[in-house]
Image (tube, rainbow, N blue to C red; front, side, top):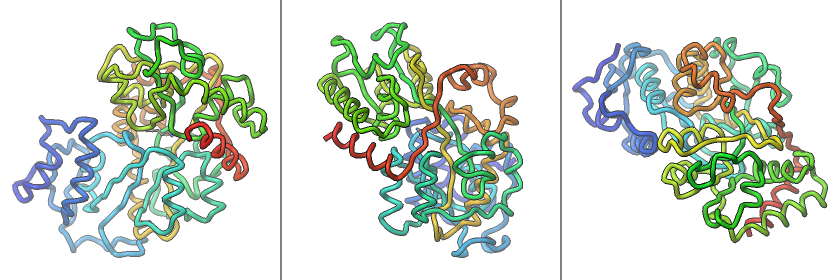
Length: 391
Ligand code: N2P
C-alpha cells in the first residue's frame, strides 16, 4: 500500500488524509485545485489515503514512454459530467500510473457537443450519452480507441458490447448507466408520487419548488411519454404539444437545471425534480426525505460512454485510464459512490446488496424504459422545441 509521504505536502493537503474524506460536493473543487496547482511528477507514492489498489509508480522521467500518445506527456485531460465520480479514483490512478489528471466537468450533452464542435480542445476523454454517438461519428469528433491497451474490455457485460451505437466498442466504453425519473421530497410532496404529472402538471402548492432537466433529450422525451406519444416522435404536432405543456407550467417552475438539483433536493429547497437516478440517490444520502421514482407512464434509460476526441493529445493515456475504470473494484468504487448502474456485473459482488437489489438503480425487466435514438433531424427539431420552451 502506498502511504502518504512527506515529499509533497501540497499534494497531500489537496487530496486530504484518509480520516478527513473529501466530501462529495467539495471533490470537484479539489479536482480543479489539482489541475490548477500543476502538481508534476505524481511518482513515489505521495498521495494520501490511497486504499490498497495502488502500486508505487516509477520515478518521474524513468518510467516507460507513454506509448500511443501524440504528446509524450504523463497527462490526461478528462471532461465528464458533474457529480459522476467518487473522490478516490482520480488520486489513486494518478499515484498508480504516474499520469497527472486534469478533471473538468460539464452538465449537459448540448454543452459538451457545442464545446467539441467549436474547435480542438485538449480533452483526451469525454463522456457523452449513448444516443449522441451517431452525431459524434457523423461529425468526425471522436476517434477509434486504442483497444490494444484495454484488455479489461472483456469485463464488460454483453449488453454494453452488442449495442446499436457502437457495436464491439471501437469508439466508446461505458462509464455508468441510469434512468430518468423524479426526485421528490416525501414530507412536502407526499409519498404517492408515481406519475410524470407531478412535474409536468404540478399542483399549485408545489409552485416554485419544481425543477426540470436542462437537457433537450430528457425534457422533450419525458414530456412526450407523459402525453402518451412516442418518446422518439419528431411530429410537429407532438412537439407543439410538448412546448405548450411545458410553457404553461413555467410560472410554477423553479427552473431548468442539471447540476444544482442534487443540492436543492438535499436542502429541501426543491420538492419535485425531474432528475437522473444516481443524482437523486446522492441527494438522498444527505436527506432521508428524498425519494426517487420511475413514473408509471415509463421513462428513459441511458448509458454515458467514454470516448476520445479526434486528435486528442494523449489517446494512449485515455485508453490506459479506460482500462483501469473497467476493473471490477474500480467500477464498484465509482458506482457505489454515485449510485448509478455499473456496466461490469463482476463489480456487483463488491457493491452493497441494498444497491444491487434496488429496482430503482437496477430496474426490473418489466419497467417501461426506452432508449432514445437521435438522428440529426431529431436533434434539430427537439432543440428548436426546447429553445421555444426555455426562451
Ligand atoms: C451525472 C449525470 C448523469 C448524466 N451527474 C446523464 N446522462
